[in-house]
Length: 187
Ligand code: B4P
Image (cartoon, rainbow, N blue to C red):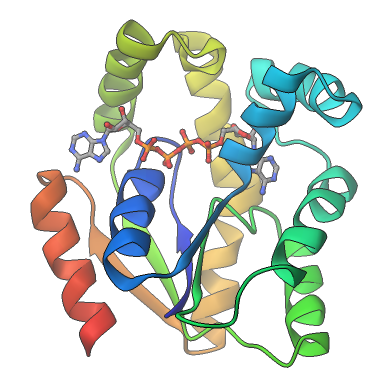
């Protein structure tokens, strides 16, 4: 399993990536989780990233690529990996292709989790109540959706052109979505 999980904020990429990684023994690399951990530890990278995250913008490509390069290299090669929330821009996708080439690895599937804007807003408002994430306020959610449409959605054509894209409907219960992903992984 060498997958990328793609989708709008709150589509459930992270939720599903965790379940798949646990079931299939793959490494789970979430740039969102890595960034939140850098912020919590108060590192230089975390301090720079926080400003962008809090207003719903993407963290600059250079910071993301610096953060992920070492993690990709240190991954065990055993049961594969799931990249969750990375790449998020075309520049990141091109850089990832180069890194994987150097490592003589490749992606075998890019999964787009499709969810409409209204459902996303309601899910993230729910998460804000439970977890209090600074980037789950209404204003920031709207900004994140806008950024997704402009900067990340073009990756759908990028990966579709390479013949690697699969889609799942994310607007269903977590276990139903997971059932479809499990079938894809086993096919
Ligand atoms: P992420 O951590 O990737 O945040 P996300 O898009 O909200 O996560 P996800 O879609 O995985 O949602 P989840 O499963 O948690 O990024 C946060 C920020 O970090 C970005 O805005 C950006 O600033 C920065 N960043 C990260 N990566 C970057 C990169 N590569 N380049 C630049 N910047 C980057 O699900 C959300 C909620 O929905 C949860 O509460 C969950 O319980 C619920 N849910 C999930 N599936 C459901 C279902 N089927 N039904 C009902 N609810 C469901």
